[in-house]
Length: 215
Image 1 (cartoon, rainbow, N blue to C red):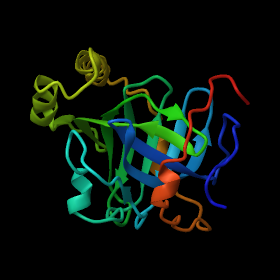
Image 2: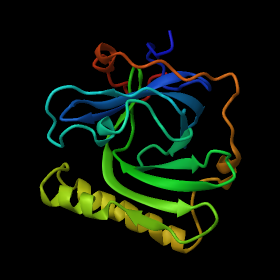
Image 3: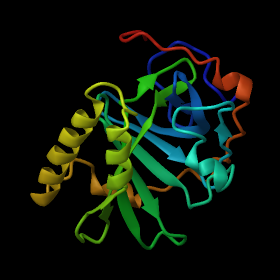
Image 4: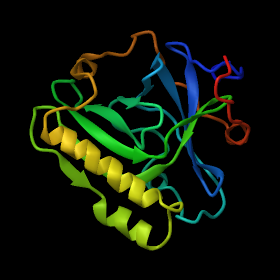
C-alpha cells in the first residue's frame, strides 16, 4: 500500500504520503508526494512530474481549485517542497527540463499538520520567487492575496500573520540570509522512484490528525 496508515509521527525517506489542502474543512486538492527527509527542523517532500491530482467535489467558498481548469496531473518538472514546522510558507525548488537552472519559490501556506496519511495545509495565495542565479526576488499574486483578505477569506488575523512572515523573510533575503541550504538545488530524486498513483477521492476524506508527540 503506497499510502500511510500508521500513527507514527515521522515519515521514512522514499515513503509516499498524502498532501491535502483543506478549505471549508474539506479536501480542496489532494496529491501524493515522496518523502525526501523528515527531521526535527525540516520536512522535504518531492512532487514528481505527472503526479495525479484529486480535486474536491461540491461548492467551495473560494470556488474550484485553480489548477482544476489546467490539468489533473502535475505538468512541470518535479519540484522539491521544503517546509519547517510552524512556518507560514514552504520553499519549493523548481528546475527547468534539463536542471541547468533553478528557482526558489516561496509558497505561503498554513503551517503543515501531520495526519494519518501525510500532511494538511492550505495555499494562502501570496508567493515570492527567488531566482537561483542570485537575482532580485519578485513578489507574486499580491493583488489576489489582498483581495482575498479584504473579502474575509482568511481566518481571523491570518492575513496579518502572513504579511509579517513575508516581511521577516524578505528582510532576511535582503541581507543575503536565506535559511534554506543551497545544496538542495543539486538534489536529484532516486531513479527507482515511480510516479505515485492517484489518491482515491474516498481516501482523501479519511485522514485524521496525528497528536503531537506521538511516535
